[in-house]
Image 1 (tube, rainbow, N blue to C red):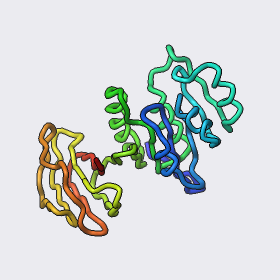
Image 2 (cartoon, rainbow, N blue to C red):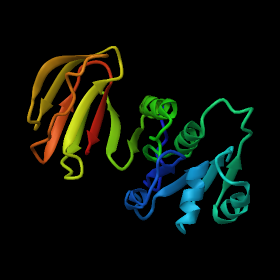
Image 3 (cartoon, helix red, strand yellow):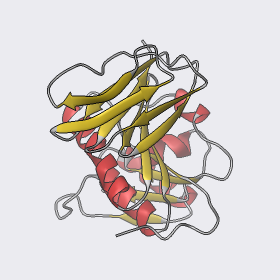
Length: 220
């Protein structure tokens, strides 16, 4: 199912309960539709920001902080911790998509819980399947999922660019603007061929003929 684009053209930013810090504030811009998922809502409220939507089971929020979240958020959706089928981050992504947001950033989606981090990487497929684009961002990484063609703008914050397949094989991989170009290459799940490239042009192009590849920009 395709997303009917939100007519105001805004992007949605999901702040969820992984590793967060003041770096996340630098990722926000005026006009963002802010979704606080679980303790991500507490993070926003504690920084004086107003979530457009707070949602989740709030099991990671101290009970005494819940009234402040409910009061500050423009809308609050609480779900039962036992009954729900999806993580709070997936609930937030689904809500953002259902409300017409095709450009989505997820902050705090990576952290010490590797199961949650990996599940959130897999959520990028869900956004892409509905015609949107979601990015996972933390203090050291920006992760997107590419199929077909992607343009990568140079960013001094991220000196490294890695390509890792999310499908068993990714075929017809061609890179231009990179230190280590590829032409009609094949990336195979479980192999590290695409790790630690460097973008040397102002814009790099990634083209693939088949499959899905994660593009991970990072810094130490």
